[in-house]
Length: 293
Image 1 (cartoon, rainbow, N blue to C red):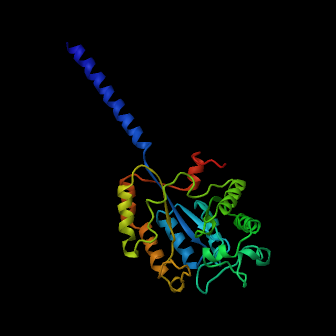
Image 2: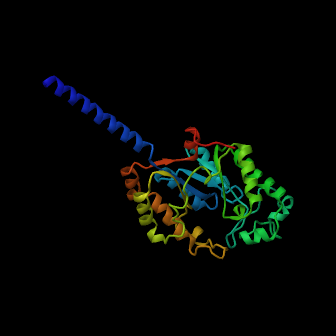
Image 3: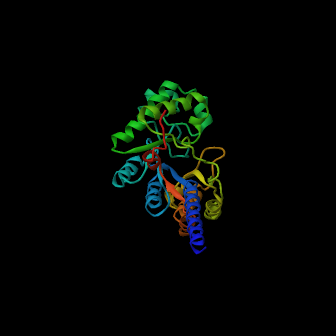
């Protein structure tokens, strides 16, 4: 009887271990995974400072460069000095700030349908569309932006788009997909990520950290994308005024609050406690989870 009882004890112990391992394996395959993408690197000097802070001391995992913007060279240098940063090109056909504009990478006379009479990008998607942009010119300019980033010695991991002008029509989206395919780059937001759950763009500055913590605490297993716009509370960024009719007022407050949220010890504590996996597009590619059509 004792031998029979011992046999049952061994059997039940082994069964318990099998259940435990199966449960742990199942949980490991159901982790909360989060890509934290920053947009508008290169827009201002303050933005570049904010990106460096967010990459090195926060949870930022990806950063998109506006290649035509005035502070792109400074941003590119920082990226070369920090090769572990996962960066992409934030494809741009708008310059939306009052008294602070930029032109295409190509000479503006070569892409006249993309610019106003002074050779600057249009400030709004409506103005861009009203000028009937040429698909051929659009493709040339977007390709020039990627080429410019590559010529600066940057390792690119993805593409995404600035504002919503390039999302308004299928023919524009097709151009972006074509360029992504030719350069072998994924498009952020099209890699199976849930972008809606972690949207804190319009959350009031004083509430961003709290709302982000709540989302981190309640997120179910899956791959998520959090898009932020790093900036600082500086005179340079206080001067920035969005010309879009629905643009945020006092943009610097929102951008500096996002930096505070993604560098917050409280935020990082929740991520550690829940074992949330922070990923970049480089990570997804190295894990074989991205396929370029």
